[in-house]
Image 1 (cartoon, rainbow, N blue to C red):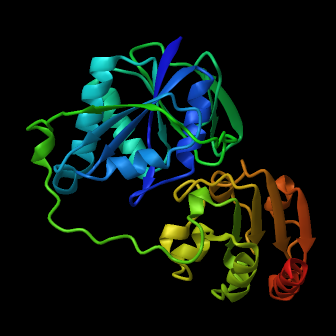
Image 2 (cartoon, rainbow, N blue to C red; image 1 turned 60 degrees about the vertical axis):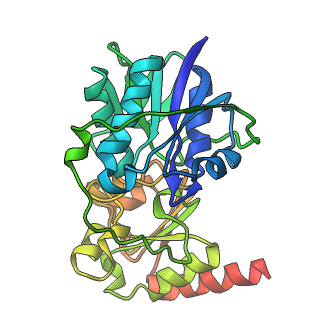
Length: 316
């Protein structure tokens, strides 16, 4: 049976739920080995919280990670992949994950597929390209099959894992040490879920006129993340870190609520894989209604407060 590696995805020192999604996808192809790359003394706590069909763990700790960043991570992972020669390596598809994947692919002379939304048992990946208008099925034919998988696109098996653990010692190469991190600013996590991993996302666009209070109110009532269209972020109404779209973040939540968003292809490319799409827009001809499962033609400033009250009343 093939041996499939996944890179444990972390938010700070905590394992993200995307890791279980990667493990579930990997188990379709073979036995899953999780790679944990962490600072000294951190890997034990990480391994103890792993879930999903993970049969074994390769744990690497290095004090060079904090100083040399992504090149150090990629160098250590490349050494493991070159030595163990798995059939595939699955990584979460976000900025950090895609940079790691690209570096490992070059270092190991392997093929790479990014932003896959599904993986079959034979290693065939499914991607949505050209703004989500075209579905592509592709398979890597050279080296290790390195793939990045979009969070929330695979239903995870979250059963507790009890893997065999192998602690390995590797040194970061001198080439990887040519990059040096001189200062960092810790990410400040707010009270809402992380946008790319949220089960529910409520987004606002040009129709908010810069007032996101109603959008945030509904999001908080639903326990959702807040997103924004490019028009809203370019206008300075909401931080660019919350932009959903082709040049922003790609999300695939169970529920996506688009408020005052026209539905240009740039935005649709980042959210149309959502399981259920609800649209609130006073323009009945807005293109986003074409992909909506449910639509409300009305002013978001009238609709959202009523919806928020309804959600709160239902929860109580």
